[in-house]
Length: 197
Image (cartoon, rainbow, N blue to C red; front, side, top):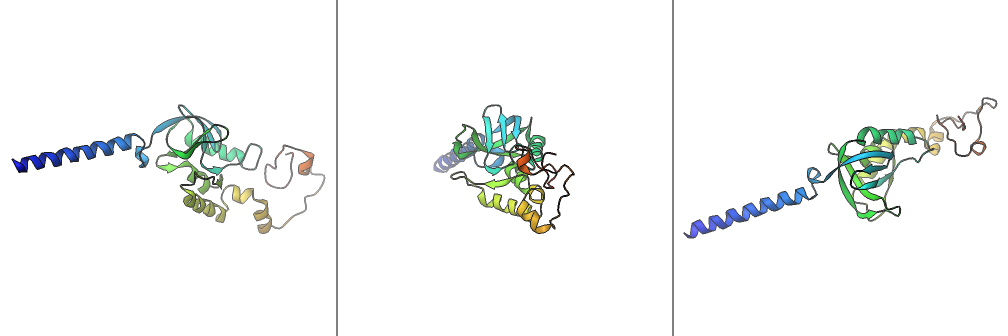
């Protein structure tokens, strides 16, 4: 009888452990597969999306070019292609809202964190704001690889870096090349130093 009792107790304890583990995963535990899923309903720009239940979400750890800046369209297009209309996994930040009342979260699709994809492909720069710094070292590595490879904006939009790599050529006047001050709000569409294009 004593052996039967201890087997029953061990079996009951094992079942409780299994149920607890399943419960943690279903409630958004630490495994990627266990994180909650949510549909991205609209992409605002490269680092901001709207989601069905979470509302407006700002991606943690990155800053993509704002509208009118070099590579803004490419970053927005990349996020739209990867996330819009899709169910993604999310992990809320330690600080859950920013000063604009947007939800702060890490988003993942098909097991890959979108922030890392943005950095790795050169669509964004790292932006770390404590206490949301959990993946900072991984983000730094991804940005460094993109920068070293001149990927994305690093090969097109970093004027200090580009000036050091390319000889400076005088832009012939009369070709419609105007300085930035002549066209406030306009951008240098092809990175040649001419604005108002």
